[in-house]
Length: 117
Image (cartoon, rainbow, N blue to C red; front, side):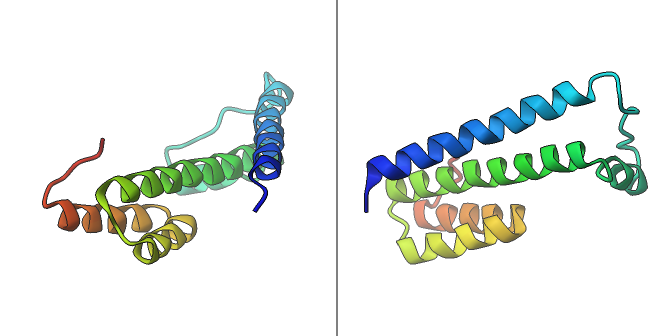
């Protein structure tokens, strides 16, 4: 596995993602109606705009990746087997909070405490 190449690719992808976020905001300033978060219908209408949809999707991917990285880091510190962590990562990627809650439960059982640090 070439770690330098992976580092470069991830850096470029991150740069592209952050660039997309910035440009989606720049293109929307003053041109779009205010989003309505008071109802599911309002949120759905907000995401009918491609710029809003892209921003939401990038947020979804970045946040789940951040949580997954935290899970891996914590699992190494507390000694959770990598197969168990892999299950949590898959659930985090597919179902977000479900994978995180499972990981927190396993970590609590393993350490006999609730520790988020």
